[in-house]
Structures are given as C-alpha cells and as structure tokens.
Length: 632
Image 1 (cartoon, one colour):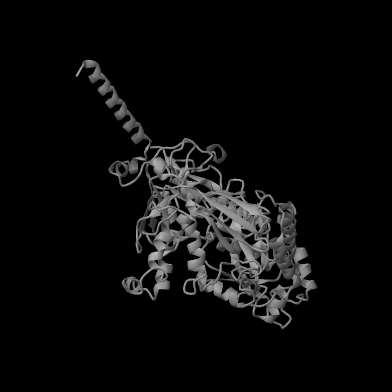
Image 2: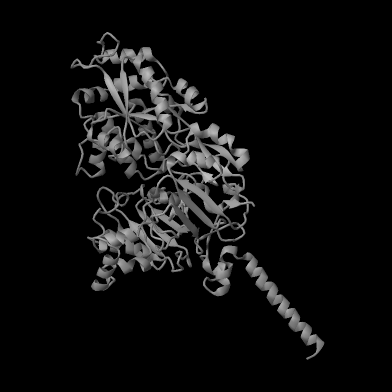
C-alpha cells in the first residue's frame, strides 16, 4: 500500500470520526448513551417531520444548554397533576397573545364554527416511540366515550351543543374531524385549557386493558392482580392523562413520570420523542428532569426561602415576600412578583340560593348586594394588606384583558357607607337594635356568617377589615372556617349566606374564550350553586333560575354559544360583563395583586414579569417551561 493510499484512508477515518463527533455533539447528553447503544434513534429520527419550532423572539427567549434537574415543591400527592398544567403540551394551545394555535396538531381548520378538522404531525411519537395517529382519537371516542362501561359519565359537556354530540370521522392516518349541526365555540378553548379536554389516548397501550381487545380470562387476571373492581375501573386507573400516576402510560408532554405512587418524591424525565424544537432545530426540553417533592404546604415558603426549589409559586402568598426577600442573596434565588390573573384576589359571594327564605329574599335584592359592595373600603385593604401594589376593583377582567373597560371595575366599588346605609334603609332594613345592628323583617339581628375554606392568610386579614367596615352599615359579621369539601357542600346546600373565595379564574379573557363564569353554568359557582347545577346537569338536578337578572346572564351565555363571529362574541361578552358588574353577583376587593415566584438565579428564560393564573396561562405553561434552562 502506497503512502498516498494510507493518507487517503487516514483522511477518511478522520472525516468519519469527525462526523461521529459532530453527530454526538448535537445529541442531548442525557440520551447520548442510549442512542449509541441503539436503544433510541438519533434526535432527527425521534422528531416529527415538521416539529413545532418555538419562536424565541416571540417568547422573548435565549438559546439554552441541555441538562439539570428542576426542583419543585408541592403540598400533596394530588399535585402531581400540576406538572401537566405547567408543561402545557396541548392539541392546540394559547400563544402569548392568547390566540389559539396548533401544538401537538400540525394544523387545524374550523368551518362555520361547527366543523373542526385536525391534522397531526407526520412522525410524531408517544414517549415510548409508538406513532401518534388518528387511531388514538378514534379509540377515545368509540372505545371509551361510547362504551357503556367506560362512558358512564356521558359525553364531555364541551362536546355537546344543545344536547347534540358531534359526528366523528377519521379521514386518514393523520387527519380526523368533529362536526356539529350548530357552532361549538367552547371546543378549542376546552382543548387549550389548563385541565384540558383530552380527546385522545395511547390506543396501542390502553387496548391491553379493554374487553374489546383482550381475552376475557387474560383481562380478569389483570383486574385481579391490580386489585381493581372490574376491567372498567382498571382501565380508568391506567389511562389518566391529567394526573400521571401510571409511569407506564405513554405521554406527549415534555417530561414523563417515572415514579409510581405513593411517594414523596416524583421524578419526571425528559420525553425523548417530544415534538418541539428551538430555533436551531434542537429538541426540547432543555432540562433533563423535573423533581417534585411532596411536603407539608405549611413549610413550602420556608423551604423555598432556603433555596430548596428552583421554581416555586404554588403555596406561596404575598405575605411571604418579606421572608423570601431576606433569603435571596444567601440561597441564590430571586423573588419575582408576577401579576395574579384573577378577577379579584379575595371576593365575596352572596348566596342567591340560600336556604333561609328571609335571607334569600334579602340577598336577591340588588340593593343589598350593592350596599355590601359600597360598604367595603378597598383603598384601605390595598394599602394595609397589599402595600398599595394591587388595584381596587370589582370582580371582573383586568386591564390586561382585551375586554377591559374601567366602568366594569369601578361599578359600585367606591367606598360610600352613607349610600350603602340609604340602600339598606330603602329595603326595609331600617330598624336597629341598641348596638346599631340592623333587624331583619322577622325581628332577627342582621348577623351574617361569612364562610371560608381557611386556606389563605390573606382572606383572614381582608375579612378582619371588612368585618369592621360592615359594622358601619349595621351588619354584624362572623367568620367560619372549614375544610374545602365541607365549605363547598354548605354553599351548595344553601346553608351558607356568603362565601369568600378568589374571583374570576380568567381575568385576561378574550372574546373567543368562554364567558361561563358570568352565568349560572356550574354548581361550583358559589353565588348561585343550585341554578348552576340545574343548567350544568341539563336540568337533571338543582333548581331552575328564578331571578330575572340571572336569567339574562344565562340567555346571553346561550347567545354566545351560538354566535358565529368574533364581533358578535365580543358584543355579548361586554353585555355580560356590564350586567355582572351592575348586578353585583359577586363582590370583588382588589385585583392585579402580586404572586411571589421564586426563581433560581441559574435558571434562564423564565419571564421577569408574567401573569400567574389558572386560565388561560396555566400558571407557567404558556411560558413554555420546556425552554427554561440552567446556566451553570
């Protein structure tokens, strides 16, 4: 062999080795060994043909590095579901401007508000490497929802329009369609929600627990081994998407749970087939693992303050800020103050369905609700409790919402105890006992027990101020605290006169979002639980709406459901917001208050300022935690 031939061979070897180094360098370090051993295919083969490219400019991000464990603290094992909220991979999801865009889906087309066609990404795979196809959507609809054993709860409400279910059609391996006779504007927002409508399941995995696909004796053995009631109960246990308790269940989220419960430490490892990439085509997430530690919620602030969490907001309150600020320098974190996206940080809910007939008549008189609102000194609450950082407001949308108008936040919110007293006198509550407490028509003292779930120190502090303020308008206030399930049961049954809780879940709404919080649509609404149950169960339970102003809200909601244009939906939203504020169906105190967010100084791409809310931001979800990275 000549020297020239040897040189050519050496050059070829060096080029080959260089290519290997280049390929290895582009691979995620955590997965490199699995790729080299053949357990996993290379990155480009794990991604869909057209992955979702996250626009870093739009999200105000920087390119990151791979690696690291993100530590989170949670107060109970059920908080496992919060990881699904945070990671926020959805068939369609909210963009930073709150418009809905494809995510897991490559594209979707809506025809006349009633025809929804989705196309999946070619080559997209579940976390176990199995292809995601239309079969996963067919399985959910035909083998779960339409199965007598698995579909006992009926068709999801978001998939019913005037009681009508959709027509489901598989067009090809990656394309499927849902069609209704009437528009269904709730469908896309339900798919994009923090606790979304999951219209798919990993069929290849779930079929092993379904009587249609498994031998009877084999399935009976699985039921016995799992100590389940029957195969339906086993199937339900194994398929939960929202709370990923089953480590074997394939997922489409950025991280997959590897820890079976019970446990106090849950480890979520990166999904090697996740469908998103950064602008350079590198697969996300950047962070290898999310570690969720379950501790007493009472010590979460203390642990966050000693640097035991890299990203923490849950179970932190504004009153924790001074303590958290003191630990920043020593423990390498910063306490950011995000805006809370609730209609009111603390709100009162007069129960229009109160069981006591005398009190029910009083509460249903709008003059009483307006007097309650006028009797609150919101400026004092803001200064004393929130150091002047919040906005005195009714329970309504915030200035960050496209639907905001100042009159909605200001209606019946100016502190005016003289006017409040006049309204109460006009109602016939003009008689008082010697200590100044008003008397009811039946001679009882106007003593009101405000009930709370007792989960917030802020609620307690705000109620102390309100108790003193209401004394000025002749109302005697007591506060009762109970566990949340008891608190809700008492409100639902009408035993509660006034509840206290947070305000609107979505205070940055757009016209395309569902205005269901402004009308009696659900039993969980503390101001009209019986009416909400009546409409929410399609008249099967609860009580029919018996108050004209509440009926107007319901009629407007029904009009929104049938609206075909954004302009029409916007008009209806404004009518509902205006009516809700004028009728004072709930009583807000302040909004745009601050949520402390503890962020490690090594963690990048977490927004300096954000909106911390259940809906539509899914707390951290809309800010794409798969793009967060550690600079160490």
